[in-house]
Image (tube, rainbow, N blue to C red; front, side):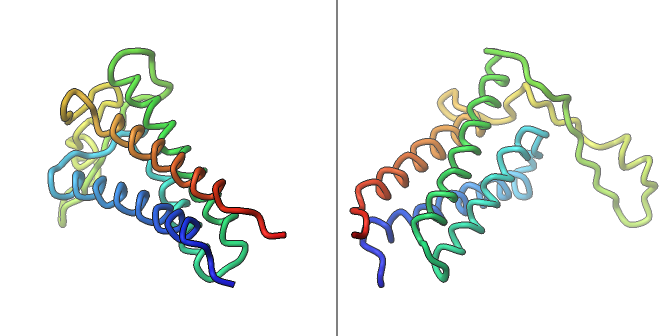
Length: 160
């Protein structure tokens, strides 16, 4: 049995949204030097799960279940992003300390690498566009995307 067009669209969105957001996160990290804080990592984990679940929806049945679980992961990441954005905008306090990323160069002492690692604060947005931080964009894109996936799945009639 083939999936309906709305389920196929939901399936594509469930794969594309987290994959593109993770791709953007890694480009911002490795190309532009915007290292993730701890809460940034919290946002990535549900996207990793969503990509895996979306991929499983292609060969396994019931397709809608895996797509819905992927949408739940996307929504979870978006909600974490909303919380993180609130911390960045000083709307509330975060629940974590700042994070540091140590890179060990060949021949470098591990202690020197740790001591010279950049401190990445969770309560400061390293980049914004129109006043919206990366966490804020994750909130907007993930939340709207997940709701669209749920809507596409809900409009699909149930099998008799």
